[in-house]
Length: 325
Image 1 (cartoon, helix red, strand yellow):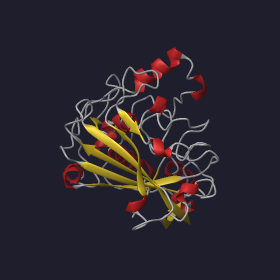
Image 2: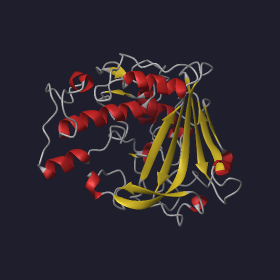
Image 3: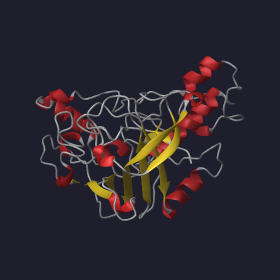
Image 4: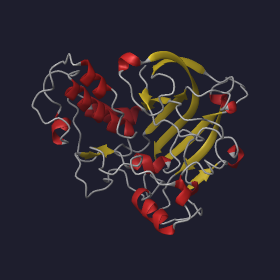
């Protein structure tokens, strides 16, 4: 089972004392309606076919399990939780990518579970996102019985520039556990829904609403909002107006920036397109260049690069983080 590297948490993200350098890795699954859409897109595995706008059907469900190498000395709520062996980057890597050859077998523990549902009752976005965290001590089956709800979100509260959030729910029982200290007073921006592994400058829906290929020229983590400037109404307004719109499934985030396809909140598809094009450019994929790579300008040549013996170049390409990093 392969894992995808997620954003590396900032100091103080996972707990009040958590340092920089911890890693988060994840694996995601779709139910039958969602998987059917993926099957159509990847009917030719090495040449995926994307419509102008991907549209998952009603009742599509996606679930993602997130694991971290963070110590339970800082994340005491994960003590005695499920642990697994996984090939991940060297300790202290954080968000930085490394060549696959540098990965080592290490111990990771379950941190967070994200669930997304395509639900017509969510009239402004079409999606509902929920986040759970594993919280000890162990009880019952010691897995699902320990997953406690962190947040629920069905909209981004566009135009809300203070903490009067109405389209998110945050568990008050987890204040002081997953949020509620100086560096992380809230989970998402101004109190919007998020998980402990996620960026305080964003929210569950905000991040996924930007799913498209190629990604927009602006990037959430490349344009980091200075959280010490929450007192500045102009900066807050600009950030909210850019990132916290209620984008309907099938609509394109940042339509002024040309794209091959909007991806209906699927960051898995966004990363998949990025990775296949990266493999083509690096010489790890042979034959005809996938259509999406040429259409997006990622690799404009008719065939993929020849296998390279340039170890330095190959390591550089392999270490490029996926677009949502």
